[in-house]
Image (cartoon, rainbow, N blue to C red; front, side, top):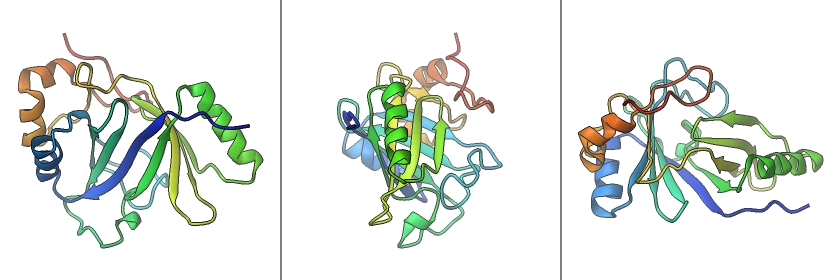
Length: 192
């Protein structure tokens, strides 16, 4: 059984300055901001990743047709040289085209003795997380549940950094802003 993939869902890294990160990735490189999240306190996914995600921002930038690069912001923490120890620092999530394919990937891993650590519904995507058992690389498979593009971004951070607000536009941000839903569905729909 082979898992059908369609590219890189996202690669995640850590930053201690989201505003400057947006200025570089959006302002200089031109990658659109397509997801802005402000995670609640306490951590909504305790134990899902190393560190405490409570209160951190998590932004995604479109780098290809459906591929993204993502950053977790930890303002009050010094980002260590090995940031894989802090809040899901370095991981690769590979896109699968559907939730059925995600279930198939989970079954394949489990049938072959690979522990699936988490199966998460983020609202804008659904993902499973596991480690490469040989190299201990944090991996995942994920499928989009929302367009997360320039036309229909997933904007949940109620207080986006200035560079993101400038890139998206205040009026447009207000129109597409979602609100965190503690039941794990990601948020309510855009405001009218």
